Image (cartoon, rainbow, N blue to C red; front, side):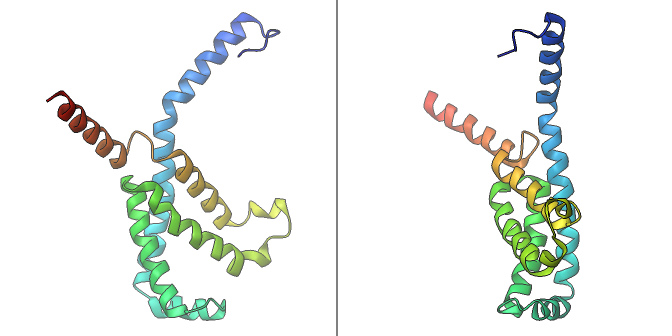
Length: 162
């Protein structure tokens, strides 16, 4: 509902602007998925190829079962990052990455947070926020998830018509 005090030309401009923003949502979601997906593929690739270094870092952070967790984190970053890029099982792929970012914030980065203002300086908080947006909003229309669900809906409607 538009405010009654807003002049008609501004109401029209507002509606036009909101329409443009809505049309750009699939592209925005694609860009967000690609940005965070490429980031995690890169970090996952590096970790998978140097597990002993990751284990050593996890030992320093006193993360339980550092050997197991190093392997799990490394592969989840690589595989879930790839899934985000493709837009495949997107919401599911965000879960291990969200957990990983929460653990990273609570173990490796907690000392860097001194208030709300310092949150902007902790990259993991930004990644966590973007992962939460993807988890709740979904991958968008430009994704394998959307393509697969459209194909499934077409098959279901063909079956219902038969």
